[in-house]
Length: 440
Figure (spheres, rainbow, N blue to C red):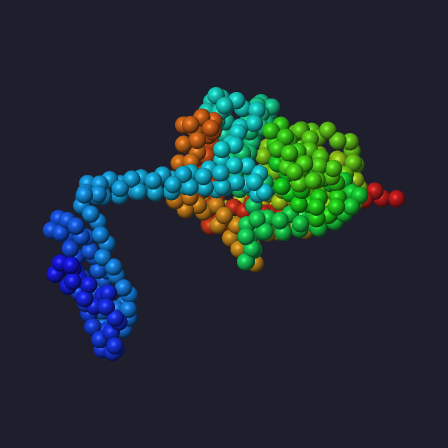
C-alpha cells in the first residue's frame, strides 16, 4: 500500500487508544484529492477535539472511487439528479398537502380542489362578484334607501353562492363566531356554543325547532344530536340547501334535520307551528330587523323561546372617527350587510314586535377570550391560500374570479379584526326572548 494510504490509516483502523489522555488528543483531517491520487478519495470525518468525546473509537474505512468509473463531471451529474428527484418528491408532497389536505372542512366536508359557486356558472363568477361589489360598495344610506328590495336579496343569494365553498374550506360547516374558550380549539368552542343555544331554548325530543338562516347546517346538526329535537332550517341559497342536505345525510341526521329554501322575511310556515327558534348571526342581513323578529314571532307557539345573537356596533364606536367608520363599512361590505345596528337595538326591536326579553348580553366579553384571534391570519397563511386559489384558477380547477372573492373575504377579516381589537364591534350580542303565553 502506498505511503499516503498507510499514513491515512494510522490511528484510525488500528486498536482504540488505551488511556484517557490518548482518547482526547486531537487528530487532523487528512484528505486525498481525486486529482492528486486518482485511485483513492479518502476523507476522515472531523477533528477529535478535547471535548471528551471518544470519537477515536469509530473506525473510518477508505472509500475507493476508481477514476475510471466516476469522473468529477459524473459526480456532479449524480448530485444534480439526486437534487432534482428530491425537489420533485418534496414538491409533490407539498401540492398534495396544500390541495387535498389543507383546509378541508370538518369531516372532509370540502376541499380546495372542489371549490364551486352554486348557481353561478364558472364563466360568470367575475361578473357576479363585480355586480355584488358595486351594489354593496355604495354608502349604507343608499343601500338602506334602495327601493328594489328583491335585487338586494338576490345579491345576498349571489354572495352565498360565491362564498359558501370558501367558508367550508377554510372555516368549517358552522358559519358563525363563537366565544373563545381557554384551552379549547375553535371547533370545540363552536360545538359547545351551539349546545348552549339548544339548552337556552330548552330544546328536547319531540319538539320542532326553527333555524333561521341555517347556512349549510352546522348548528342544526349539533343541536339535533344534542337535544334530540327535530330541526327545520331555512336559507335563501339553493346551493346551501343542497350542501346542508348532503351533510345531514352523511351525519345520519337527515331524518331529524329538514332544510327548505326561502326568505326568512316571508317564511312558508303556518302560524304557531314551532316549539322554539334560534337565529345564529343571520338576521344582520335584513334591512329592517323588526321584519325578521315579527316573522319569527308569528310562527312560534305561545310560550316558546327564541334566542338570537348578531353582529352589532358597541358603545365604543365613534361615527366621527374615520378609522372606525372604515372598519365597520369594510365589515358590512365583506358580509353583504346593509348596515350594522347598534348593540341596544336588538332587545328594543324584540320588545317592539311583542317578545318578552328574558336576557341580553355580549357573549364576547370576559371570561371569553378574544373572538377575533381566529381571523388573524399570518402573512404566510394568507399568501399560501392566495397562491393555492390562484393556481387552481389558472388550471381551471377553481372558477375564474375565485381569487377576487377570496381577497374580498380576507379584506373583511382585516376590518373585523381591527373592530374587535378596538372593541367597537361584536358578533356575539345575544338576546333570549319568549313569546307570551295565551292568557286564559
